[in-house]
Length: 164
Image (cartoon, rainbow, N blue to C red; front, side, top):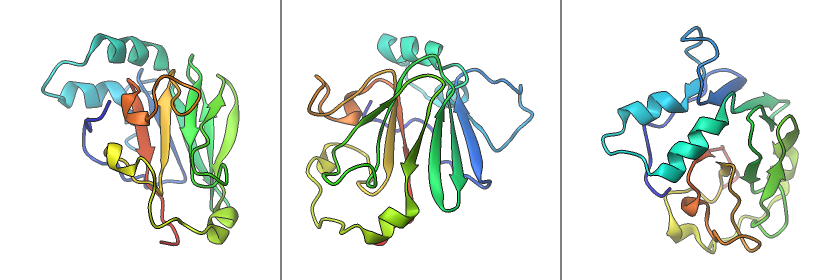
């Protein structure tokens, strides 16, 4: 929801897996296990967060290819993503079904963007308007009852270098 769980994670390789069930049982230090983050949390998670986390499974893979970032949905749930390069209005939330992928951040397009001086909704939560927000299982925005990603039970943010 609107509270950060765990420390920021700095990706050191060109791809990173984010999942709930550890497929490697600790073989890779470059991946992020959401269940490990949950264990670090001092307060119990709400039931809706626990239900979503159980279905994340293999989660997602973020892959940096030629400066752009691809998002591969390996989970059992649809995922939802918002990125500055997905639309002109900065509010486009794209749904990615299990087994599909999306170029979630286009580095060439990012160089041509005119970043607005004020982002509507930026004050609502702990999110960076220049980053990508990714939610498991639940969407947000104009077409959903959740107007902001911070109302989704399980989401994360990818911070990107931009032309700020």
